[in-house]
Image 1 (spheres, rainbow, N blue to C red):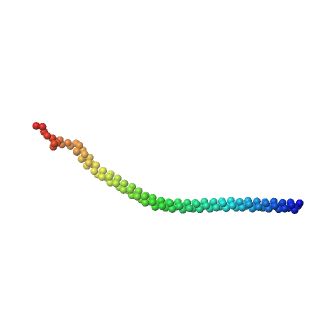
Image 2: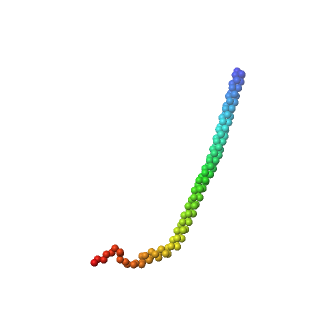
Image 3: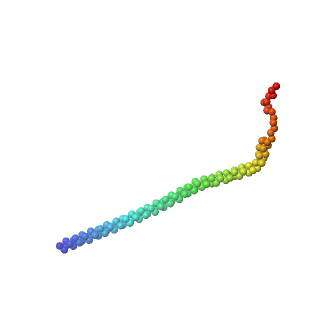
Length: 118
């Protein structure tokens, strides 16, 4: 009977060791999965940063030329406004005199098509 109890004890101990090894393997697997997930996240972040940098470079190349174009158009508009304003101030006096003379100075004349009734 003692040999049976010893055999049972040995089986129980072997079963306990197997459970411990199984739990240790599960812990290692969980740790490895967690590590693999962290590595994947780091790799994704690195790739995303690289692609964003490329996008920003392309965007500055395209938008930079448009920015220069916008600045040129703004400069031309300002110059045109300045020219028109100076022309207005220069010619305003003479145009007002011409308009007033046309309105105020009336020369009555007979129209060339008018026929005098006889």
